[in-house]
Image (cartoon, rainbow, N blue to C red; front, side, top):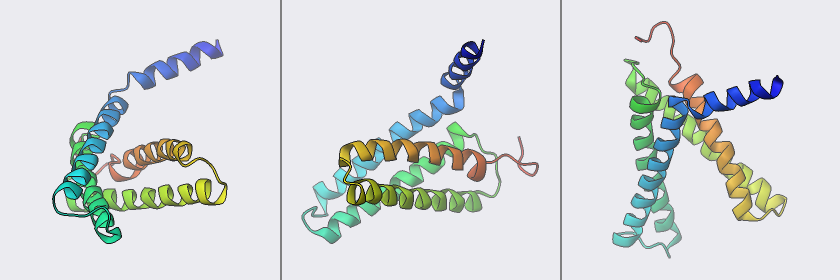
Length: 149
């Protein structure tokens, strides 16, 4: 009986519109991030220069987080919050927090524990994806009494 209940929970999670939308938006956000980064280094920034490399990375992060905010707002969480600036600032702040977590965990796993960086990156990205979803759902796009349905 407990196995059946677990199966039902997993099935409802897999068929959940919000989670499916979040994963699709995440893939699209990754494509935007890579396209912007590669566009920057192919046209006006030199990836062999450390400062320009980081500039390309920062530009890519800003554009992809902006894309993620608007697509998550509209398609994933269907936010009707009229305080868009406050919501956007909260979204960017949450992404900065998870960026810090990402960097900290990579340092811990790779630099301190000598874990393979490719394996560590996969583990860290799973943690970050889940963290971003939970923060977005329960903090950034949280539905409250003051937000129209």
